[in-house]
Length: 298
Image 1: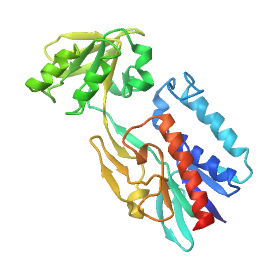
Image 2 (image 1 turned 60 degrees about the vertical axis):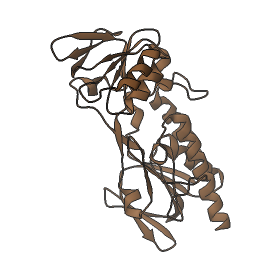
Image 3 (image 1 turned 90 degrees about the vertical axis):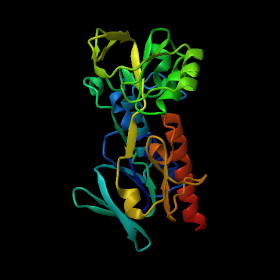
């Protein structure tokens, strides 16, 4: 069977795209590897109408609603190869199965490359956070930390000072110049240049940031901006164009989520530099609508 649309990625962008394609009465297949980027977070915030729910609960309900459309199908699996085929595209799964579609939507997401600090990975999504709009309100008011990963961390430290008193940990990776120090002082951010030796949870409300030399700083949460990589090789295999951002690549798309390859659309974190659920759902909706309309109008 050749599907009208295949969405590779069964998280927020992929399911949103699939719903709109199914509402266009098209046969749509979602390939879901089951590894959404925010699986480490206990709660999701800032997504209209779903604030405070767990990401898995939101996805479970979204999947149920998509599958209520008889032309929609979701399969578990990892797509490891995509190529042009007669009348569209072929996608091969890691179990050897091949599926075809007239249109392809890449919603594969990105993978975070966490700083190499002992204890950090175990706190990721709970006490080590990325987006203040997603998680800042819940830790606001107490002392907060920002762990430098590069020059972009300067912006993060200034921004997050709106949620609490910030200690900016340079971690021997970043040293502000005189102008940057003045900017930090204006935002009442304390700069700590020492290397961070580890992070440890001290009860439910405190993270102990260990510093070289034996000193410790206690904060409610640590924010950091890890670099990321696209979690799937499909866009490269298809020849899609990319933009290079300060934290990683993103697939180039137009205002209808169309990539540089006709018939291939992309949505979610893979197709933009700023990431959250609301943006992913919006991009997925546009990709689903645009894929459907391209089938109608060519």
